[in-house]
Picture 1 (cartoon, helix red, strand yellow):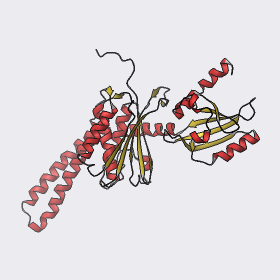
Picture 2 (picture 1 turned 90 degrees about the vertical axis):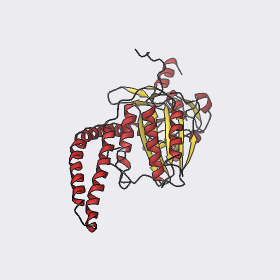
Picture 3 (picture 1 turned 180 degrees about the vertical axis):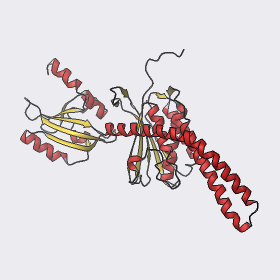
Length: 359
């Protein structure tokens, strides 16, 4: 390659691979190194299908494209590696001009953009819910107090067999008040106090709290990357996020005998581009994985919206609050769910390498 060719190859933002006649990798660009989480030197000479896991019968189509010197486009298939979870991608294959038998394979991750849109929508919905909560909570709690008081006064002059009705009024009114208090808590969340955060400390605090309380019957497995650098965030708010996800995982498993896996890893090429042109590097990954029955299909796509819940008597505010906290940290959250495995993934920024001292 000439210098210009080399610079162009390195500048391609999509993971790109040059594949030889025997399906071995002859070269990769820097984006592909990031996608594989491996160096160029370590992957050259290896078979492409041993490194990529593609949820489609693409090998035969790839073989035909090479034989006929034609291009191949496959949209919306899951592509992953042994080190990372699958991403929904478009796969583009074309013969390399001037190099007989060499094929160019490019991946266009699509899942991130879709999840970013859902993340933004969830944040907007959460903000709308906050405004509604602040407006309605006060207005509803006052008449509820009057209803409760009136029911208690009525009960003083009723026969014992009629007390069931007034007791129902009082208990249901108190239940609604507790719900409104949760809504108010949802709306009173302060902005994050950004500091360097050891994510493993946060996870350990959440794990210990869970096994001493709601997750006492669960098995919580730790799968940590010990070299993970500090995150940039609010430790207390991130603890709230992890505890909420652990509680959900416990309830999904029935609270008795399930397994929850806490996994951390570093994905140095993970960058988020926003609609306004700004972007953030989110290399720190946390996964909370349970072996429960999976999310109900009816709510799977709306799970981060306020008042959407898969549990009877659930408020539907927990995951909306989680989504808001992660969005306030300039991170993102996603979920993959199937029977036997539900995986919530948090992607967060690392501590800035150079920070201005506080005044």
